[in-house]
Image 1 (cartoon, one colour):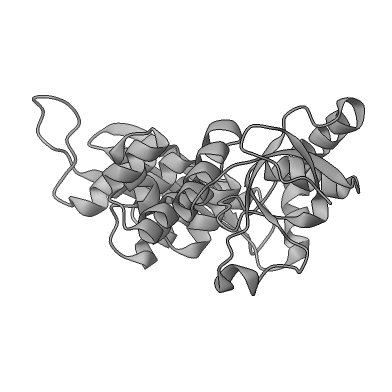
Image 2 (cartoon, rainbow, N blue to C red):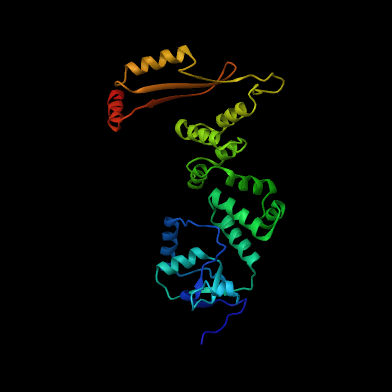
Length: 293
């Protein structure tokens, strides 16, 4: 009969007696990092025991647990997954007493301090901690050791359209871009700005200028002591000089290729520019590339 561990001693627990932490905020585990951990375990074994608790004897838990499950992970799910993949029988573990509040808090702290969550996973974890235990943002901040405004800003990311959240989660756009878009009230405009970030590789600074121009159409201040100046977005449709430049480009390209040019300015100060080409058939892309060569 297996000896029941106390809170201090390391025990070899059977893997099939352990279930993952249901409060685990991380949903996607980095596969290269997991493979690296597996290689390390093959060579040196599990150097640090996982932390588990005995599964509560409540019906809500018992009804959703495998028959032989006895323990739930508090910290160390990556080590547990690595050992599972390696088809090991046991894993070193320490059993601690912990309630649901501590489970969620410890799982969050482990991930944010040791293996960073992506911004959207972090935002969901903070919100889960606040919603599950009816905590204010200040109370969440005190428990995870960050500033209150950080908690608030991350949770606000969850108000963005799903398409933007997905890109922030994959980190294909910077969190600074997402934060810059947040003051825009409607989803349609948010998505339009998100598309411009992706298509034109806008910097966070330029995006903030666009957002300020949208929110304050009378003008954008350009420095201390200066009067606000109107942000201007010039393109082929409203600027003869850019229209002429676009036509010159079009003459160098195959037929039916659309050309547009954008300039962003405040007063006479140039901020950024972009050229976009549009085509209707997949073969047109190869025609464009040949023309450029």
